[in-house]
Length: 212
Image (cartoon, rainbow, N blue to C red; front, side, top):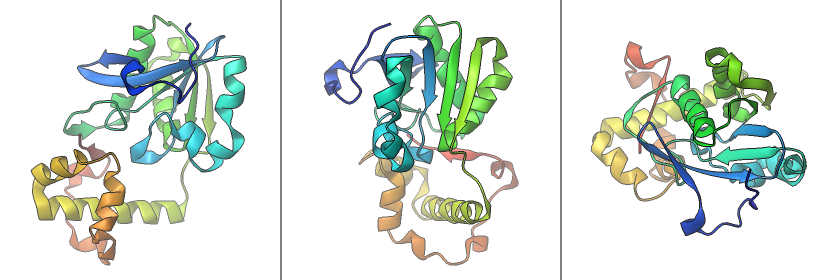
């Protein structure tokens, strides 16, 4: 497999794969058995988060793992330089992106590593395609009461923006830059105190909606 230096590629040189009609930006770092890495950082899960975010920046996985593995890192759909679609998203969509990337690279089996919210698609991948999984590592899974409360608040903020501006307004906002959550906060929607006044249709509660 090709060895590249993470973060060293120019924008024009970054490899992409077309998976289910959506462009996926990826890099392969190091050499050895394949290791598919689902990035941390929630709804901004870009490949650079392995070197820039929180605990992942401190432990420097990409300084060590590429010495023994071919690390396959990628921008999750709807983030970074990957593409996306306006549609209802489930874990299966993220599984399909990872599997499609392995198929693109002609890899039949791989180790899987997920950080933070990346743990969930790793587990879902193992359930959907056990024959492709050599092992799974779930690093820093998210959870707990405080996280659940703050996540409900974030969802209320996003829903409030949609309610106020409509889907077209959301798409226009996202096209201005990759950090939708930051821009929502700047718009003052963090001031919404009572999330219960925003009606969440029952069909949307088990899943979230992502926008391009």
